Image: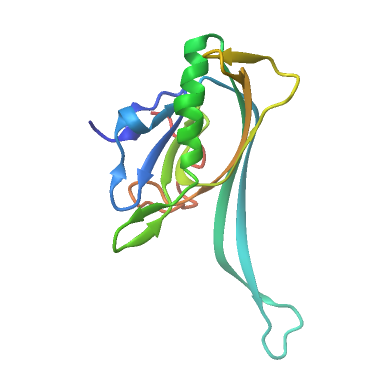
Length: 183
């Protein structure tokens, strides 16, 4: 099957489940490809510093103690026909939501599912989803499905992704490309 990152295209928007110790999971089951409209995208890097005071100094010594990077993303998914509507509510949205739940392994406790993601040609990375919200506004149009239930045609989604080392274990480095590399 090859590694999932080779499957990414710059004009697409992907999430792919990637479990620690196992790697990428089945393409048929876990490649979440959205035809979404991004409403907000932010990328924040936060270096951390510790201060220590030495005797005889009024100013502190400042030591670099680490960094973290988060991507905040808002988008909406619209269903333009019944097939898209069914795919959104029976596959894409539930699978995306399940990426916030633990993976239990007998005898090993639990772990978080990790993701590989690609957002157009701007951002790609490896991380964990730290928040995920679905929002359905009352003024959105709704569709009657199977003559029994109503579901909205539009879903607003906001999420935060905490970036980790990439899938090959490479750590962030000031000498490396910050945004998506040209492939």
